[in-house]
Image (cartoon, rainbow, N blue to C red; front, side):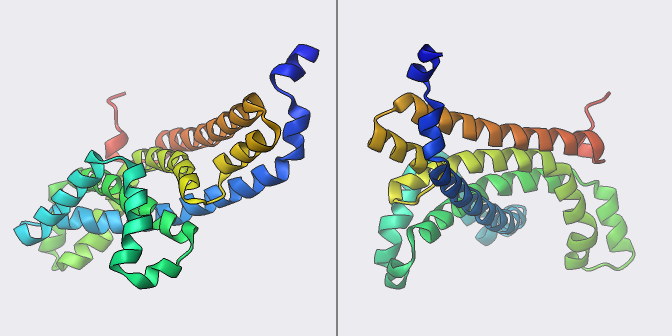
Length: 231
């Protein structure tokens, strides 16, 4: 028992449960808002990327390439330090707001590729059928394309959500108190790295396990041609 307490003293962790709960709440809030924004922006980017007009798809292609080619850490710094210079009003925004913006813009690029794949999976015959009954482009998107696209892409969307939740740990570098920050606080005050980083790892592992289980459940029980694996 003494060896266990020397390696991982859970009694010390218990003293910081309130701080871990606060950090977890901030992590989940940042992830939830970023997810909603990323899906909305990503859907718009996907539609532009699939446009035949170069003025629409070229800038989006460049944006997606930039996001995927540069580290998220660099993007957070660009938003945190660069945006207030370009738009002075944003200098009064909180670290959480700027962090959420960085996460949203980063994940929107990945969401756009996921949604684009879902849109491409919709049968062309259904789209042509919509045209045949007189549906406009917007109506076809609303009633035929997007509902099926989102249904077909739910598993990868949930997988990207799990990645997004882990990415929130980078917000600690701009003074956002998240789940990682709670562990770092424990280590700085008590100098107990095992208790700090093992608790952080266990927390993110639990969140990831929940998201993967949710993704598996959705894939198992809901219908969608993109989930057909031939079985």
